[in-house]
Image (cartoon, rainbow, N blue to C red; front, side):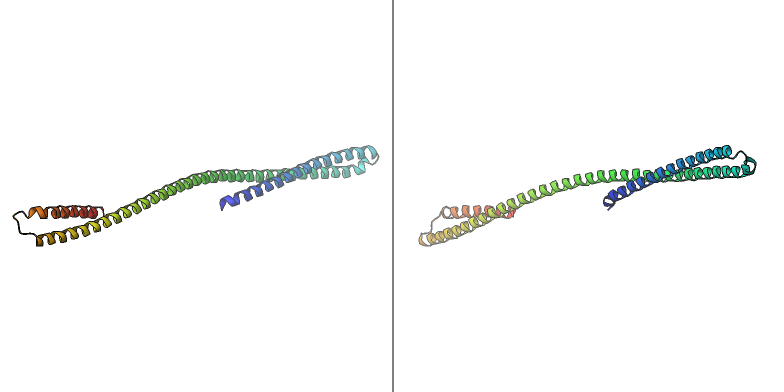
Length: 207
């Protein structure tokens, strides 16, 4: 919000500075006019003295009053112009100070905006990296589930083969005459059972 108001405040201050400069120029012109008016009064006094030599005694007081009035008027205008000029200069200095402060704030806001933009860019890069890692983990999980499914299928096939072999062994046992070497018939079945248990243990450990 401060960033949005800064250009408007800057334009307002520039307009105020222009207005104060115009008022200062007007006050200076009034001062010049007052000086010109005083000079005109003095010149008029001289001319009246030359033209009214015979009435010098009677008009002397009038001339003095006119001169005093003119001088007082001139001094009054000069004082008013000086006071107005000082007031305008003080206001101009104050506005310029506020303008400098706003420029400093605008500069700080620009630096903060650049810092936030850089931080946002870093966050976007981190998000992209996390998305890539997430996709990789999903792919690994998919492959793991696929391997697990194949292993379960292999286990089921081995279980079926084991059952079939056990049935065949049972049939062979029923058809053969008892011999003192039972380990030779049970050997393949025992090896197959042990291999099946190792495979199941491996699958359970991976799960």
